[in-house]
Length: 70
Image (cartoon, rainbow, N blue to C red):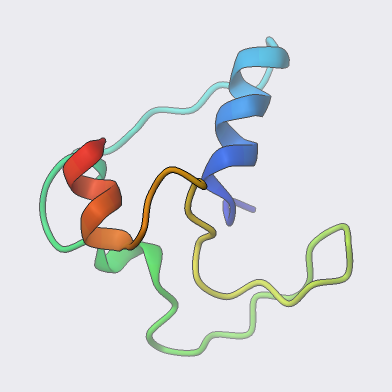
C-alpha cells in the first residue's frame, strides 16, 4: 500500500520490479489525495504503525510545499 513517499521513491530506484507512475495531482492542485480525510481504517505498516495520511519526504514542510517543490 502506498503510504510513504520517500520509501516509495527509494523502492522504485532500488527494486527493478517496483514500478510506479506519478499522476498529475503530484505536480499541481491541493494535494488532497495525500490525506485520509474520511478516516478510512487502512491497517498498519510493517513496523506496526497505523497507516493514515501519506508520509511526506523530509525535504517538504507541508502538502502544499511538497506539491510546489515537486
